[in-house]
Length: 145
Image 1 (cartoon, rainbow, N blue to C red):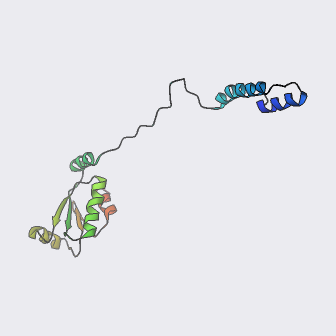
Image 2 (cartoon, one colour; image 1 turned 180 degrees about the vertical axis):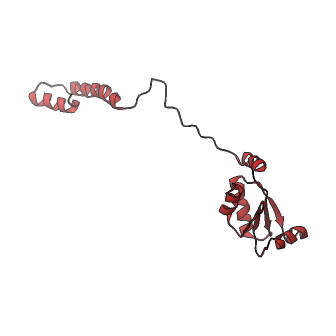
Image 3 (cartoon, helix red, strand yellow; image 1 turned 135 degrees about the vertical axis):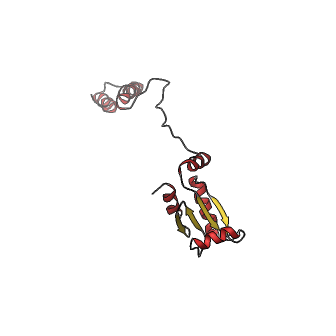
């Protein structure tokens, strides 16, 4: 079947169409008739269902971490920018951890030295140790990799 505008032009050339309203009506009918055949249709009043997205909050991730993952300990100082960045990265991933300030806690300072600490942050994940700012390695150890 020909497009409506082609039919209108043919009718105008032959002189069979004298009223522009007829052409407009023909165009409207063709749009209603042909467009839905090509478009994806749903019954009136119904829409395509939206995809279901479930986001986990940090609290539920920390609770999950407490059940399934090794203990995470961060040895820090109060002035260390990388220590604060490490804490933020772990918070963002929902990892539960304990922070020890090696300048204020003598017992933490001894553990830090025993682990071979020479800079901060130093992160212990179970029996594994991460020296310096490396949140990706810490996350991989937390996930058991």
